[in-house]
Amino acid sequence: MLETADRTVFTEDHEMFRNEVRKFFARELLPHLDKHEQEGIVGREFWLAAGKAGLLCPTVKPEFGGLGLDFRYNAVIGEELTYAGSAAGILLQSDIVAEYIELYGSEEQKHKYLPGMITGEVITAIAMTEPGTGSDLQSIQTTAKIDGGEYVINGSKTYITNGQNADLILVVARTDASAGAKGISILLVDADTPGFERGRNLDKVGQHSADTSELFFNDVRVPRSNCLGEEGKGFIYLMSQLPQERLSIAISAQAAAQRAFDEAVGYTKERKAFGQPVFEFQNTKFTLAGMKAELQIGWAHIDWALERHIRGALTTAEASAAKLWHTELQGRICDAALQLHGGAGYMNEYPIARFWRDARVTRIFGGTSEIMKEVISRSI
Image (tube, rainbow, N blue to C red; front, side, top):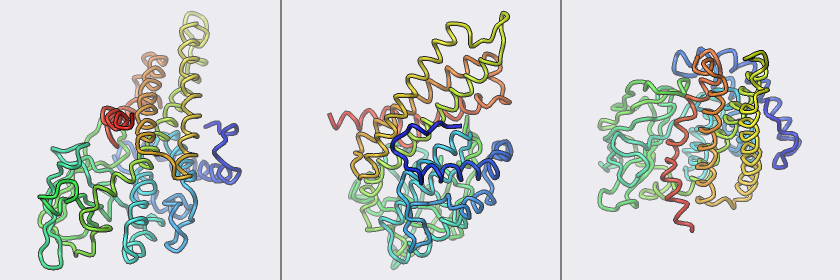
């Protein structure tokens, strides 16, 4: 269990909420973790249960069915979900997609989609990455050409979280081929729109419970009213929401690192070698001590970043630094924790194997570590 009593960023209300989140996950998530991993998807029954419990999109305003809470409640859910060992895509919906629709959507779009996103009846995805384009969003090839009162979308996307489950896809497409970044827009595509097809549920190294897919758009027609915000402002919208997206990833990375450390402590205190617990060897204690020191620093930094974000002060460079540092920390901690398990760590029956596998992608998605350094360098 995460120790949160001495953290200063949360109030008593947040801690009461955390207790409810833990109870919910103990009942609705933990018994099904292995099933989710084996099937490569988190079933809709979990989404609906999460919606009923108030765990989806808690920051959305009450007028759209939300609770109108601050982002710290999202952080509580993210920490507990990741510490539990799940890669369920609810954080994408709550921390990223809901923010786009509430900030940039028309009143009609908000009333059409947000209530269902809050109840879990509408599952969302955001389609940015393409087979030939990763972090360089200005190079996307998917097009949306105007034909009368409609956009006609053609192209393909890959590595899309919630791709198999999604009822609504936010598609990043080029609406003006000659305008560079100013020619990029975000279009709302319902999954039952003719011409939209899902590809395979991708076979990943880790995060097996997250459905991650290829998506195809073949003359997909949507009304021009399905443009999110203003046409040509998509790139600006994407850049404007980077602090929250990258902070969300950093929070999850820190929680995963903490769980990996806790698993290593538990295992080394129980496992005996040469007549004593593995924990008693100096190398083990020193390794764990170094990990604990880094985690202490990490939690202090997460709380600092959270506090700045809820004040609206967290910059893109600061959020990128958080994403860089915490995901790299996650990689180091998970690897060291697996090593302390010895051969057992390489067995999938031990939780550390899952945390080690799942850690690798966090240094890639949401912007690679190399891109984070590039963003940070621009602020120097």
